[in-house]
Length: 189
Image 1 (cartoon, rainbow, N blue to C red):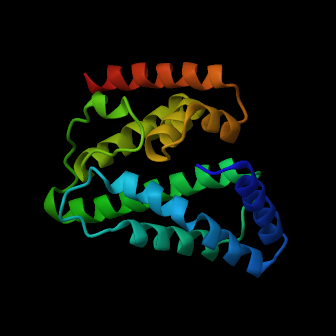
Image 2: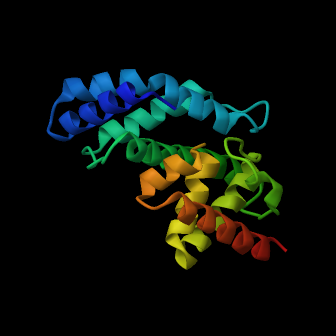
């Protein structure tokens, strides 16, 4: 996602923001804005064509949610982007729920597991709600495996980045990904 110097810049600004430096917060969001927009664009790529959210709107909502709260104790750039991906997921889920509330009354649809093969593309809104329900159940069964799915699928992170964000080895990430896919496949059939 970024080079070493940018990672250090982001981590430094996160630490200064945590210490109450509002200017560091503003510099941080200016620095990460292009990466966040790219992440949001990937998330919206497979949404319906008439979707009312655009990448900039998702990033703006993300910034409002993150700035509106007390700064978390972000460990580093990877942790920040993990939280950003999770928050973007919540934004899309909230939007899909609002849209579905009036149209479908909460009826569930099947989620194709093939959507979980890659990262960075999302199923249509209806399937996104079902995936969120499955992830909530997986989180009860295996919290770390659910985070791996979330970071890979919604965050577009690679195995090394996920390992760094979760503080585990790449092998553990691969094992959790495999277990999560098996768990999800069992519930989809």
